[in-house]
Image 1 (cartoon, rainbow, N blue to C red):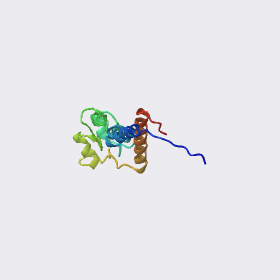
Image 2 (cartoon, helix red, strand yellow):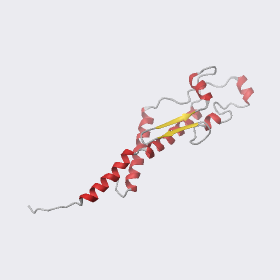
Image 3 (spheres, helix red, strand yellow):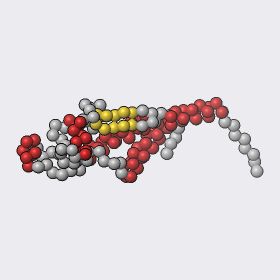
Length: 149
């Protein structure tokens, strides 16, 4: 056997670990990406699963068959930064949704047909959000000069 000696600059190694630690103490970029995708998923759900069809009288009154899209104020509130949009971001979580009072009536079917706007996160969507989180973290690792796969 031929012995090989390897020395590592411990200061550089510790500095690298400190950089990496920052990626896990501030997860705001991860939650920001997941929150944006969550808002997009809500808008997609409104577009593709609006609930029961409108009554003829409602169509006549509105002049449209679009469900939950009358003036687009409720739908539009699921865009970050829009009027009534809720996007609360921290280093440990994100909360997304709407402050539009009409949402609760539709979500629960109070005085109007029940039209679920925000549905429970399915295992498929949870997996998608996890992939987004991993992709964001890998990008952040690369930005620090590390190789990540």
